[in-house]
Length: 326
Image (cartoon, rainbow, N blue to C red):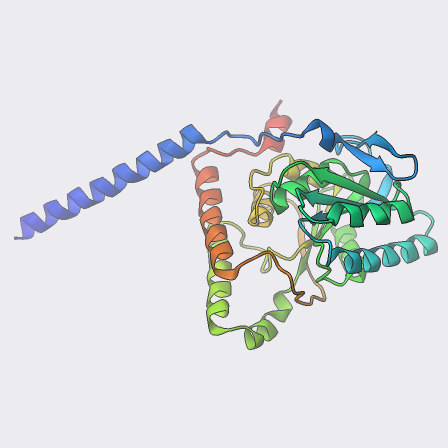
């Protein structure tokens, strides 16, 4: 009896080991080590509403010509975008009015929107000028991470912020991120990320959420800690500020283009030993979210595991390290 049980355990463990090896082999075979960043020709330009001409976007590899670039990923956001842009541009105009050295641009990235998102954004470009507001219209939906990446690759700023189109984070809290980032990285050539965080609001969120959503939230946080990011409590807040040098390293190495892209960004940052600062920001939940709690978090849980596995077995590699070695 004991011998049969030992044999059964041996066969079971052998089967698990073989299955694991097959999964690793499949991942290595199916996965390209570096991201293949494709950009359609029409995505290389933006429309200047005043001259009615298309102008080529600059490159993240160019030297910066502005202080701040704000990247706003937007998918079917015709209703929520105006209030966010109103608050954002009012703050930036006030800041630049008090400091002539503070120059900025806002790049709205329409992620294959089917509604009037592009028209709404172009209205702001016409009002404020294409030097301050530009619209990048993606031909097809890439996902939030893909939209943010395309905006970053088209930016001119010494510092680059991405901010969600729903306006859930109060935009004046940019000042908090700016202060934190300059403590980490006095110059744009230095590395650093200031990460907006809602972790201080967690107890309030638990009090207003259902028991099921609270379990999902804690489960997701545990998976993030287990598979990817250990030093940051809130990886998903859509308010993150990068130096230009750091943005070059991270967004050329990013593989994930959907909701879990924030986690991969911070996973890369930790593995590259980049300076990070988590900064408490004011945040309000806004109606109209594209996330459905159970299925979206299930997909993100799967993505977290695959991020960990692919980097663990070498199926994914960090492009900035490859460039440095060359």
